[in-house]
Length: 343
Length: 151
Image (cartoon, rainbow over the protein chains, first blue to last red):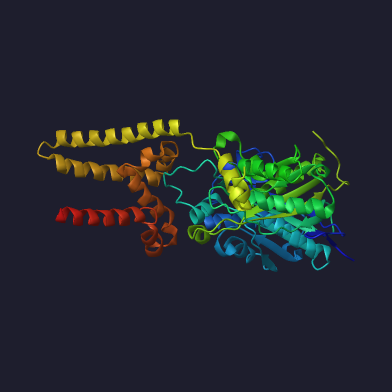
């Protein structure tokens, strides 16, 4: 049986389901647009730990534990944990995984890691290799800031194109057994580089990657943007989203009201994040809170979740290299056995 | 139009993005930085005059040195308390250019990297922001000194 469509898309005929999910965010995110949707909001960005790195690990652990608990599973019933983050050598995900004593795959796709994890996890579950797979990613504003930018207390100004790394972690449990929304397809993206060098303008660097993946997806699956209730990119931010809409229109696809971006939606205008949120935690928390809850309610039935990532390091940007981007997309279809509860 | 045809895809994209990015509003930024920078300088002058009034024997130069030390201390303290970066957000160059900005650029990495240990964290990273300023300052003053010596 051929489970591949076109060039870059794979189909999951057995329909792996997201049987449970969990999101945890920092205080600033908790004051943003989705404050009523997150499962847990931190009161203290350190989460009772002695460093922000430890806080990031604790958030991930907390999200994974609670998503497993919500699925009525025990930790030893989980066959595989897939996760990633933004820190060097993805320490947050692997250090967190040592608490679980279960097989672990660390993946890195910068801020696209959640979609990448879901695609890999769905393939394992669909293929019958594993029954229950946990996909989790997380980031912390303060750890990302010190790794990529300046010390927190430095009195510098952020440029207007910059984005705010989201403090948060999201976790989803995938399985063939149980109820939940189905992951039906995934389009794996290509590394795309349109020559943007400004590390403070991630949206512009990632937008061409999002365009590439979305166009491939529409061509592979013979669908159009109108076939989805929601097309959601990861963290292009306001500027990146506008660029993506321009690029798509240039290529004959019109992204309408059903298009949005997690980074753009995360914060409200008073929070002065300029272009919006970013980081693995951004798409992971929005997916595992707002999007899945709205799917429960029946507001969205067919979602194209296309998380985007900028594949740079501090070293590459200091050596004057451009910023390549990547975007992976998964299609999530509503579980119609759930009662509709449109507001 | 004809010229644009020779541009590569990436060059065209960069031109397009450049035109699209929001610009910093320079007029309000100038006002804020002027006001905050001015206030910092007034505080400095106040400390200077105050010192000279309290200690009549103190000369202008000595009072100057003490004033700088006090300003540096205040800025470090504010950095440690987490307030200086908030001033910087709207003041911009107004809080970076005076000596308080230099103090902030040394204290902030020291606070930030303390967790990586005293030697490899604090001591190594302390000059990660201010280092280039010190190096360039030394080189330029060396060159200036040489020129001054011969001419």
